[in-house]
Length: 257
Image (cartoon, rainbow, N blue to C red; front, side, top):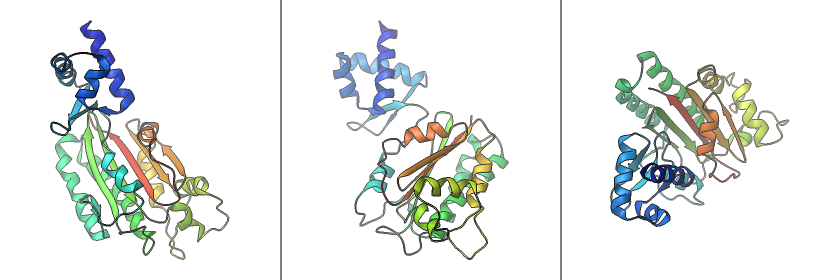
């Protein structure tokens, strides 16, 4: 019976994404005390984890990122003030990349740390390179990272003009968001014409592909794309983000343990 209840708890949390203990107890029709024992056991087994403090505590499956705050910011119809995770200028963003050094003990090597920093830097720089004067509301890109279970999750997002609008100014033959997103990652093109640039996302892609513990998904305008062994894992985490006509959201996942 105990094993069956724990299995039900895992299934419910997996389906819901995250859930409060009070709601979980109602669904299972068990007492809060009994539920607490099951939750404590699942946490000890490193199957689930808690976020927040009572009475707002929620439980989720270990290995998943917390995207609630970024979703609220990215999907809001109007932003009047940026939260603390926003880098309003390129200099601020570059300075915050140094926070990755706090993860040194969690990573396998200094080379991996350098690779993560440079890959994230390329994506973040794109937000500033292609959106000057084109922000929807306040300027800047969202940047944060978190470790959940065996994965390092990295989020970079902006409320700018989107990849299609940026690249179509250089190549009018690009038809839509889907085509623009694919071209951005797989071909040499830059929205900063006539500069001979456009290799940044190719560099990102090269660092993701060929490694079973990495993945990336990108959402821009009304299109989504993913690459790498963990690419679908990233895309699944973004499935509740509405498709719209502006902004770019990128989620990377690196296996680190």
